[in-house]
Length: 416
Image (cartoon, rainbow, N blue to C red; front, top):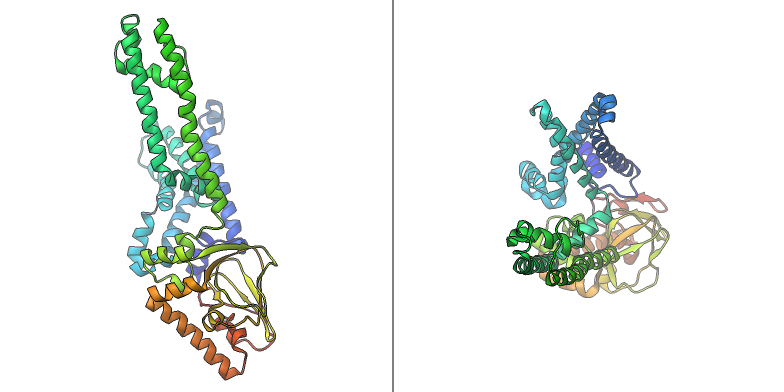
C-alpha cells in the first residue's frame, strides 16, 4: 500500500518531464477537462441537446466520476506532501482540502453530486458549474499560474486603478446629471441613472441608447470618452508588465513549493522554508550541459529540484534524481571537485553559494548538524574505503555501496 501511494503521489502531484507515466496522466486529465468544457457548451444548443442530450449526459456522468476518483486519490496521498506530513493523516488532508487547487477540484465534482439532489428543472444550471472545471487547467499550465501570480502580485495597483475608474464614473455621472437632468429627466434625472451612461462611455462601449442633447453635455461626453482610453490602458498595462516579468523570472525564482520538496528541508516550518528560499537561486540546465567540472574549485552546493544529473568519477558513474544534493563536502572543506557533473535531461537546480550556506547553518543549527553529519559520514566512509574524499561528495548514501564501475540511480528520498 505504501509503495502504491508513493507512486500515485508521483503521478498526480510530483509529475515531471522525466516521468513519462506522470506526463501521460497529466495529458489525459487536461484532455478530459477540455472535453467536459466543450460538452457543457454544446449542451446549451437546442438542436444538439435534442439529438444527443442523453449521450452527452452519460459522458458527463462518466467524466464526473473520473474527476471524483482523481479528487479522492489526491486526498489519499495528501499526507505525503512534505509541508503537510507533520500534521498526521487527518490534519494533512484537512489542510490540503482547504488549498485553492483542492477547492477547484471539489467544484469540478460538485455537478456530479448535485445531479442526484436537484430537481430536473435545475439541471441546465449545472452546465455553468461544469464550466468551472476549466479552472483545473491552472494546475497544469505554467502560463495560467504566471498570470494568476501576476494579478495577485499587483493586486494593490489594480485596486487603485479600479478606484480611479470608479471616481471618474462618479464625477462624469454627477456632471451629466447637473447639465442634462432638466433636458432628459428620464435618463439623467438622478446620479444613479446617469451612471449607466458614464459606465458605457468611460469604457468606450457607447451603446447609443443614452446620449446628451446640450452642447455642454456633449463636451463633457467627449472628455469622458478620451479619458476612457487612459482608464482602460491603466489596468491592462499593469497586468501586461507584471505577467511579462513573471514569465521571464519563472526559471530564476525559487518558490516555497520547490524548497519544500527537497528532503533536507521538508521538516522545516513554513517560515523557515521561506527564509531558505531567499538564500537559494534557481538554475535550469539542458540535457548534456556541464554543471561541475573535475578540477575546479567548489563555490556552490546544488539541490536537484527536478530532472536528473550524472556524476562521472574514476570509479564509475552515479545518477542523482529529484531531491538529491551534492557539493557540500568540497564546499565545507574548501577543496576542488574530482568529478564531473552533467545534466542527463532538462534539470532545475537550486544553488546555494558558500556565503549563503554559512548563513543558513548559523541561522538553523539543526539543519547545520544534519549537513555536517552527512559530510562526516561520507568522509568516514571514504577513509574506510581508501577512496578520494572529494570524489565521494557527489554520491548519495545508496550510491556509496555500489561496486567500482557500476552505474546506479540514487533514491529520491535520500540526501545526496
